[in-house]
Length: 127
Image (cartoon, rainbow, N blue to C red; front, side, top):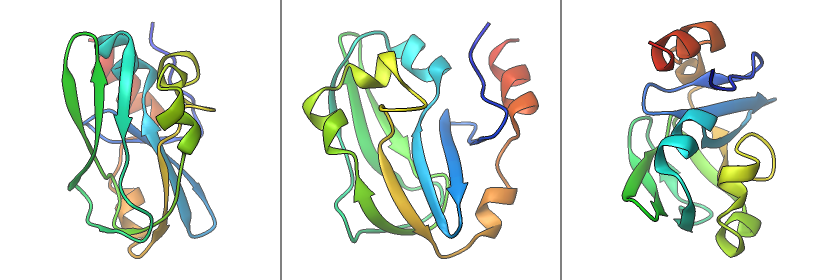
């Protein structure tokens, strides 16, 4: 059974979103990191970059494959997680904590409402 924290929102492309005020923290789900296996490289969007919901904005490489990461929300990148660039294994060991990717100042908070809740996402990945 995949770990799906109930307080997050989820994209069908396996990114999670934690909203605090007008800022969204984004990473990939436990399910996604498990499918990728050992993450060896992470490329994150530049601070200040404007992202649109659904836009490819980052890359994760594992021993198996390289995968695009899509922004689940629209906004401006205000912070990137340098720790995950230096130590990509954090994506595997702490997908919902130290393995986050970037933070976005939301320009369209309604994007969050279009994402899946934990129950819906859990149902999708556990079929």
